[in-house]
Every structure is written in structure tokens, then in C-alpha cells.
Image (cartoon, rainbow, N blue to C red; front, side, top):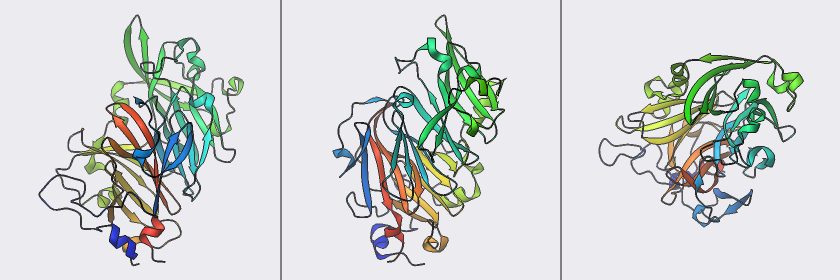
Length: 379
């Protein structure tokens, strides 16, 4: 399969690294222009999606802690190749082989909760909602046990259904879930408690004894006694979420990134399509460049914060790109203090989130859609 002419003018394919010089993810590949017919920019403004010419021309948004800002906080691909992007304080984007997503919203659920941890169980998408008491002044401990924690997204109904609450996890009034991990079978949560101005943490392992897909929202009679909860050690929980050395990464991922110099530091979040919580891998120091990767049956892709992208395989319905060999390119350059984050692929479109950040705060945010058919396949 030959690459299209436009591809050769935009990318430096497979000429990746030299052993000296500045340490960057790529030595200096040709990169996509900020304005081109093969991609579109979108931003979030006034609780909606707006197409913009460039990220820096999006409506100015006040900087807020990342837990309280509208931003894409997670993304993955369904078993049938559709893309879901979870948008904090807003809802979810659903890409059905198009660059024009459906925005699914629920103001009551999302307006004052922090979303995250998009996972799949039995091909059904779920995610978590928490309230960060440090940044979120609306967190009401008196209503804590009714706080929805696990939410099911019904793509057929385009609706959200709360399926597990704090109360069902035996979390006390002073308790606050700080993070949750799903390994494909069991759930694990870190719980923060504040008593007499003293903060402590404990860790739980829990499992639903009924099919979460069948649970109706706030159905206490149906869900009563249906969650088995047990305590686990801090080390058991830390082992789940602490980055492993990159040498332990899946073979396909190591093959995709084999050209990266050994002294280039990065921390990578690796997701399996339609899978459980991601695994984390680090190469070098923990403060390295942030990257995201998704492994699917017919492709594997990794995107670094500066837009450096690695791909191997084929997009749905098309032959292998570059005969199945790795290709590398760089997304349009972002302004200072902007970076690329989570991504997904649906049909022929690569969708990559971007955001403006200053330390722990986020301002403007949105996503970029890239038509990979135009880039890689001849007409």
C-alpha cells in the first residue's frame, strides 16, 4: 500500500531519531499545518461544542482547577470501533465514524462532579463521578451517601444511569472517593476521610453481585445487598495505579515506540479498546513527558503531549498503512501552555483532545479531528 502524496508532504515517515541532540520524542519530523483541509479544531464554550479556526482563537475561559473545568478527561474506543470521550462537568461525546460527535448531557449529574475513569464491562461503558472537597465547595457531606459514583452510559438511549452510590460502598458521611480502578472483574477504590480536622485514607475492593447493566437508577430495593465490599491494604491499591517500568509494557506497544531513545523520559497511559482501567508505564524519571496509547485488534496508536504520534495497522475498512510498518507524525503545533491529551479513533477519524493549562488549572479546551483517510490513502 503506497502512501498518498499529501502524506509525504506532511510527514517524515519512519525517519525518527538520531543518537544526539535535543531530547524530543521525534528528531524533527515534518508536521501537520495548523490550518488544512485534513483536520478541524473544536472547543467547548457555553456548554456546547464550537468549531474554531485555531485553539488560541477559542473563547477565553477562566483558569480553574482541572477537577472543576470543562475538559476531556478520558477517552476510549468501543468494541465495534466507535469513540467515546468523557467531558468533565459536561457529559460525553460519541463519535459514530464521523467528526461531528453527539454530545450526551445530564446537567444534574455532571454540573458539580468530577468525571473520569471510562471503562467497559461486557461492552457497556461506565465511568466514575466524585466531588473533590478541596476544590469543590458545593460538596455536601450531609448528602454524601446518596452521591452517585458509578455511572452507566447507554449509547442506545443516549442517557446516563447511576448504578452505584457511596452508601452502597459503605462510605461514611465524612468519606470521599479519590480514585477508582477496575481490573475487568473487581473494582478498587481509595477513600479519604476527615475527622476532627485529621485526614486518613483506606482502600476497598468491591464487586457487584448483580449485572450493573440491569441496575435501574437509584433502585435501592434492587441494589440492596448487591455490592460485596472488603478492605485491602494501601500497597495492594498502590500496585494497581503505580506506573510500571516500560520494559513490562505489551509487546505491540514496545514495538511501536522502539525508536524512542532510552534516555527520553515519559509516562504513558495504555488503554485496551473496550477494556478496563488503563495500565501505566514509565520510561526514565516519573516527571517525563505525558503520553497516551490505545491498543485495538487492527491498530495501535500513541500520542504524546507535543502531538508526536505513532501508528501501526489500518483504520477500519482500509488496507494496512505503510505495509503494517510503524509511521510517525506530529499533529499541528499548539501554542505555549497547550498540550494534547486523551485521544480515540472512530472510523477514519483520529480525535485528540487539547487543553490550555497552567500548573493544576485548565483554561480553554477542546479536540482536534484528523481525517486519516486523506492523509494515508490514495484517492
